[in-house]
Length: 207
Image (cartoon, rainbow, N blue to C red; front, side):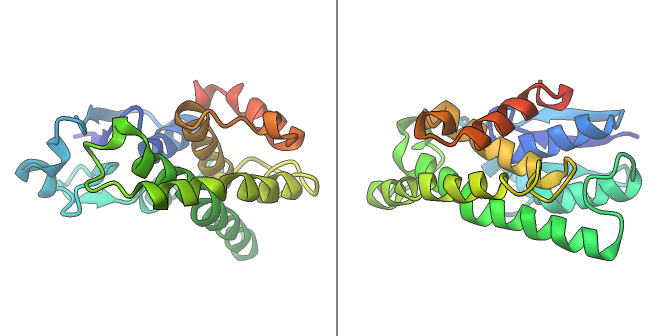
């Protein structure tokens, strides 16, 4: 029995996992779409897999289910250690995790909160929407993007010299912002961050 990944193609967190899978070239994981707008994730069958009703969820061959993007990627990294995306030494793992958590907490979440609370298309998923909160989160996106742009002046990728899970998280956040906030770093003079986004877009895993 192969593994199944319950996903929603347009949602950024599932995309983090599918990009991770694609970058590693992991075969035989069945993608199972979940209709978020139709409320499928709130149904009894899905809640049996993840009681907090969120995608993605990885169903293992023995029937157990693993939720949360980072946890799923950690599991897959253990099964398929090459190419390495989460660090080889204890030191490298720590610095990659730091970079990944910082981009998630201080950029990705700002983008997600802005969109979830201000975009009319997300109203069905975010009840109630708090528009003032969403706009306040959106106001901080540019400041957070400037921090990323400054980091890229020191090294080619967010965690150092090579592409890692932190860059997948950053790219998914940038694409979510590009699609629903019309945010493009280059429009704000963030040339390094724009070039970084464009480099990742050329990778097969981003297709």
